[in-house]
Length: 109
Image (tube, rainbow, N blue to C red; front, side, top):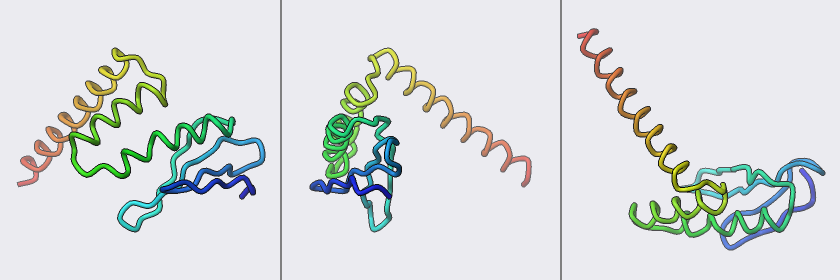
């Protein structure tokens, strides 16, 4: 791992390779997680990681939802119509995966 590690209030920002993307590593309920910040620029990576910290500190689903929507707008630079498409696609996938599991369960018993 590269020596470019920056410790934050929650987690660390680091590069796996010298000229690679930055990653944000943190822990949730004792499990280590890491997400790509999709940038090779150190300052952009730090800004993106700082934007994730309120989500990790949030206590209710409403607060988390608001932070996630803000993150989608700022970090991933999605427009509101794109966010809506992501929401519809994930809801559609979730609904039909449940429907298929229910159907498969009914066929088995």
